[in-house]
Figure 1 (cartoon, rainbow, N blue to C red):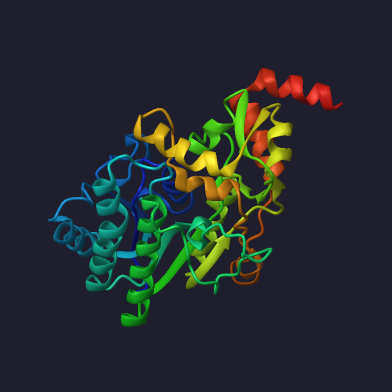
Figure 2 (tube, one colour):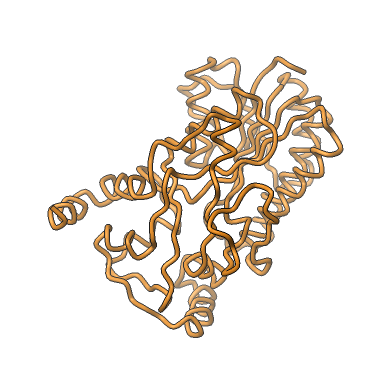
Length: 328
């Protein structure tokens, strides 16, 4: 199948909704169909097929929707950016849900499949090289369900790519999304005056502006990309420099104390993320963007610093102005 509609999942997410809107503007509403439990904005005029990926019957519903809507491309952006306290729901959505979408796409003769993933699937380790290329083994902390489910989603995609070579599968591994309108557990760190950090650690981090994330999605669809691609900002920034730029006060914590304390706070409902995420504030996991530049023609227009500054102007305009004046 070489012509047909584009099906988009995850339309309730920040990035998924922007992808849907951009494609409507580019190709027209009739070229799109939202296949999701969430309804698209009625003003877009996009067709909608209600499917809950966590339901046992979702596979049959997906196949029916893809066939009846004559879908040629699936953009699967239904991914959790925040850790969930309901591990079963998260697993059904991201691992089993991705498996069902892939199976339905293959059975319906879909020619192109684009999966949203995260550079976190590489895992944050002290042995990581300066930059991680797409052929690097994926080794996230398996005790962290948030990362494990995404790893399994990628493993399903790799399996289908081998079994169904006629269906081109692209996996976009996004760095941490950060910018205007983004609200995640990661951005919430920069909403507090004092921020705990690991004593003796200051890793480089990558913050991706949402406009660049959108650009990567559109490039992958337009070029019918195949394979894995890191979608990363033009430059990283040290964690402590980012906190200083945001006018935050780092609170150094010894790492032997940080992990059990974080798990206790998570269990008590007083933290936004479990202890497994501490690794990402301790060790680097920087994606190399060369393959995306070479094959997608994609180069991020924003650096990590620019993405952070854009977030601060949007979320904390007064504090952002005060910080800028102090640096001047």
